[in-house]
Structures are given as structure tokens and as C-alpha cells.
Length: 273
Image (tube, rainbow, N blue to C red; front, side, top):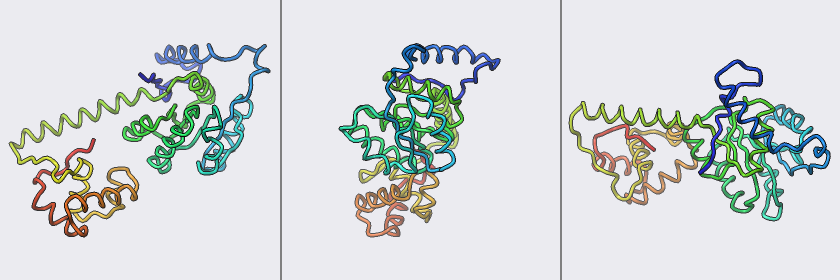
């Protein structure tokens, strides 16, 4: 089972907080693998690649890591610029990358990278945590999922732990899951209070996601609006729409909306897991 560390909530050294204990334990574990002063000079640099679209942030990270064994061999603005350096014959490499932009596509590329090179370590940096994003990153094989607001010391120690085989994901995901369960339970209670309703399961082999997107087509939503509603790319929406048209044998979105109006239940706002 993957270990998780609530790195985003760890205080900085010297902070007066109950979380000091968690921070101390985390740092103790990280320091247990840190080379001694006598051995430090003999430590071989780790092949590290840095991907950050923002040139200023990229330079800042590069300078921060330049004094460590994780000094970037290459700092680039996109994953495409470094992907050739992380192939199956590259051995152990560390990829530190911004995953805030087009998160779904970056996770897809991460999965492909991990399949090609099992020794590649991928550390994703994000602005904030989102339940769906965290789960997608976890399933793609990411080795660490960190907020950009963490301290320099925590970042470096996190890299040390990743090289030991640890997988660092926010325990904050537990709180997000609890919130989701609470919302689902509230929806169930609200539905029960409104009395029995006709609830038909997805038909024609439609998945839950496709069923919800089909309801959006009924409402006349554009691909862009649907993508914004469910935090996915327009390209992904197009794939879902094509699958829907094929499954219900509709030629276009209008026919799909007409089909949905007569086949889907009147219940609206189904939750998407």
C-alpha cells in the first residue's frame, strides 16, 4: 500500500504547532537516508529534469536544486523537450514537473513514461489539490504529488524519499474523499425526502460519465462548457460524445438530445464518481 505524507500541512522548522511532531518524524525519516558530511563529496548527482512553463519559476527551481544532487541536467518549458532523455535506456531519472496545466494530458504522458522506463521517478508540482486530479495522478504512477507552496527543505527531502521507493501523496485526499461521501449522502437524503422517483440505469451500455454528458447535450451545452463543468479537456469531451452517438446510433448532437429526452429518467444532476 502506498504511504502518504501530508506535506502541504507541515509547518516550517521552528513553527509552534501540534503539527511539529509530524514534521519532525518526516524529517527524521528523510535525514536517515541523507549522506554524512564525509560522504557528501562522493555522492553521484541524480539525473534530474525540470519542466516548468513559467521561465521565472523554472530558473528559481533550477537555482534552488543546483546545490544538491538533484541539480537539473535539463530545464525545459514542456515535457516534450525532455521526454527523449527519459527513455527505457536512461536508467534512474528524476522528473520534476508542473502538472497544473492540462493535468489530464500530463498524467497520460506520465503513465506512458512509467511504462517505458520503470526507473523514472515523476514528481508533480501543483498549485492546489483537487480530488479527481490527485486520483488521476496516483493511477498514472506518479511518485510524488506536492504543492508548490512547500519549503525547499521539504522538497529536497521528498526527493530523497522518492528515490528510496516511497510514494508521497497528500493525506489531505482523505478529507476530500470524506467531503465527497458527505455530499453523496446528502443527495441520497434529499432524493428520499422528495419521494420515489423513476430511476433508470444507464442504457445502451452508456457509462455514468457518458450519461451525465448526454444530459448536458439535452441542455444544449457546448463541449467547452461540459469540459469546464467536469474539469476535463474538450478533447476528452469529444471522445465521450462520439462514443455516445455510436452507442445510441444517433447521427448528431440534436438526435442524441431527442433520444435522451425519451429514454433517460427525469432525475437530473446525477453525480459522477
